Image (cartoon, rainbow, N blue to C red; front, top):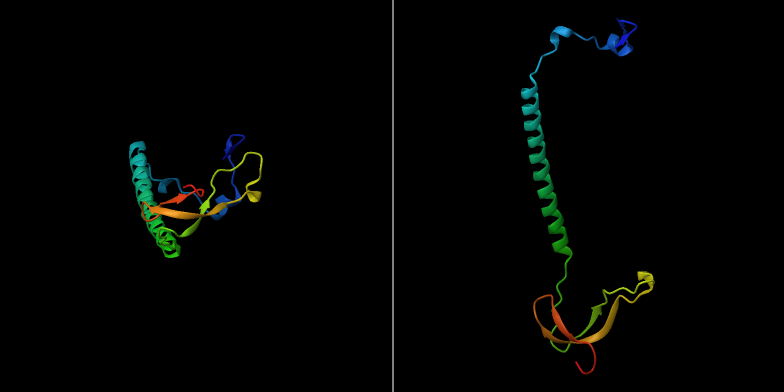
Length: 118
């Protein structure tokens, strides 16, 4: 640090002396290439750990999932996903029913009768 034309000695300079001859001059292109390699290596490590974390999260989720097997004629509740504007979701009904299962289209999708007429 320069002040009034001469070098100012700071306490950190006294504790950690600075040696001009020890400074290695690095070309700009070499610095950029080294920085790029370090960043690519860091990103590869981060991707590896993020992938492993995603796999662990998926395993934990899969252990908690319960698959229900409904048959035709079973009574089920239907999730009411449409929310009314101006009414807080806390006070709205989340499920409607019970309804009768008519058909099983896949392991998670079912056709239900919404009223007595089907």
